[in-house]
Amino acid sequence: MRKLIITCALAASALTPAIATAADPAPADFKNAAKYCKALKAASGSNFASMFGTKKNAYGKCVSTTAKQKANEDAEQLKTAKTNAAKECKAEKTKGSKNAFGKCVSEKAKAMKDAADAEDKAEQKDRVNAAKTCKQAKKDDAEQFEADYGSRRNAFGKCVSKTAKELAAARKDA
Image (tube, helix red, strand yellow):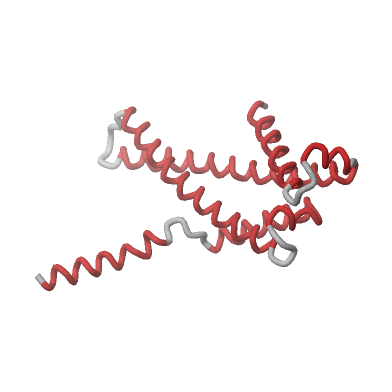
């Protein structure tokens, strides 16, 4: 009985870190988030702080938020890709070698995950381009910008969000 309890405790302790870190950002996520935030900061200029917080910590908040969001999206995309791939392979009734089903799932899941990653990169590019567009719009006609998006701290963020959504819709329609 004692061996059984010890074995269960060891098994639970071995699984706990893996479960806890499943959606935690990896160092590579921070590197990519830093690149994205640097580009977004350059594109939005002095308006960057209004999107993420005070001037002192806006960049850090951007990197942290982006890395966590990317890690969570990646985990969800991988899970969805594997589920959908398994459904497709089951529907195809994969035959052949012993591992034909596994190979089918692996290939399809990788393709789906790659497509999702490509979409994520395109969305990030849309946000950076939107920030550039909004920065220029605010510079060109501040009164019209204020009329369209308001005068509060989040006005620039509203502009970026709306413009990025429009760019994404145009990219998908093309």
